[in-house]
Each structure stands twice: as C-alpha cells, then as structure tokens.
Length: 230
Image (cartoon, rainbow, N blue to C red):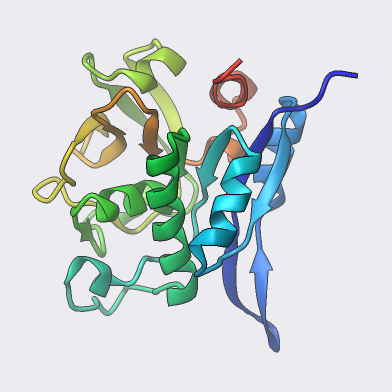
C-alpha cells in the first residue's frame, strides 16, 4: 500500500458558541485528501518543542487563512475595520514559520498565511483596502504572475490567471519583508503572491485555491506541494 505524503496544516483558534475551539474549513482538507495527501492538523501551540514534533512528521506546511493578524505584530495601531485573531494563534503561527525555516520545511501561506509571511520578515499590512469591494466576498479577478517568479511560475506557467478573492487586508507594497519578492499582482496593484528569495520554498498566495471551482487550478497547486519532495 502506498503511503500518502503527510502535509502539516495550521488550524484556526477562535471563539465559537460558548467555547474556544479549533476550527478549519473542510475545503482545505478535501483538497489535500482528493490529491492524495494525509493532512496532519497542527493546533495553535506556544511550545516550540511540541511544534517541532509536528514538523518532524510532515514534508510540507500550509498556513491557512482566518481573521486578521494583530497589528501590534508589525508595530501599527489597530484600524477600526481590523478584526484581530486570537494572539494565541498568531504567536503559534509565527513560531511555526520560524521553525519551518530553520528545519528546511517548505511552506505555503494562503490568504492571511501570506500576510503572516510578510509580517514575519519585517513587513507590514494595509489594514483595510480602499477598494475592498474588488477583493472581498469571494470575488473573481485576474492576477498577473511576475516573469521573474520562481516557485509560482513552476505551478502556474501562465502569465495571467483568474482567482477568487476574500480579503479586506493586503500586503503593504511600501513595507515588504526583507528577502521577499512579489510573485503576482492584481490589476489594481494589490500584491497577490510573495516568495522568499531562497532555495527553500516559502510561498504566499492571497487567494484561496482550496475553494476554487476551477479544478485544474486547484489540482496543479495541491499536487505540486503534495509531491514536492518526491
């Protein structure tokens, strides 16, 4: 029996009903299962030793979307439209990315996960986009893959593709993290993908491939990461 590659994936930590709960949309797990992976759920933990045990088990890390990362992480005051996630999750995600880098594990950040990558490397976010109607509410729009992108162009060779969009924050183009480069933009200049300038794959994308109705798009991305080290 062929064993499925183990892919680590972060989980939301949030107040649901009367309790604090771990939470993840089924679309993330469905995309991994359907493309042959065995998802390993990584809960929010502020203990690096425990996170290292999870990382030892997996070949790839996905940091999912969610609420907004607290702006104090990038030394900004909170905007009235910002909806900060629990600091417990934010700290855990920062630890997870830090350990993944040190352990040489490839990383994909989706939506807020891309924004985390920028924060981690010293960048900042636009806390509420002026043209939010273009990007929020599962809107569809074109993005343009940069010619000099490395990882993204391996997954998506086209120069222009249609993606979904459900975010009200974005990477601040005037404060991009050290060592990061823009891999894709939308027509209004919103940063849609970031890559770390290293042989280690650290890729952030602003859209949600796990929710794309375009099955070819979804397959190409998840098949690439699932079989990355094979």
